[in-house]
Image 1 (cartoon, rainbow, N blue to C red):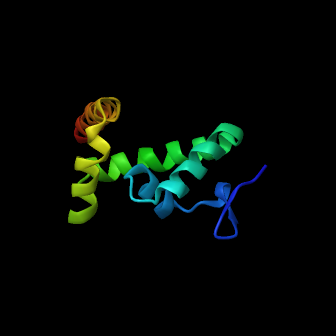
Image 2 (cartoon, rainbow, N blue to C red):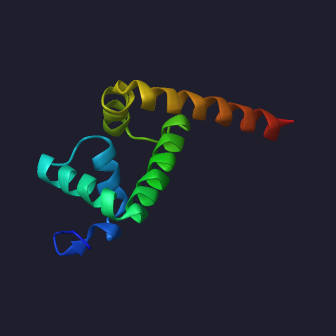
Length: 102
């Protein structure tokens, strides 16, 4: 089963749309459709996790523009689980940088 948005399979969802999903910028009907698809298409969850990892990395590197950074901090970090994930990533990022500088 391949659900579609705008004629495309949700498995073909581009990175920008996934970021908008993660930052709660999509209309509710699209969010629901994505969440329903995740249940039947595990590959979409893998794709979302990949984009989420990259989004966190861009945040930690301070590569997000002002609007996106603010949205990330207010929406994404509002979840305790996601906030903890970012903090764990921050520790790993800092450790990796320290090792690289040795």
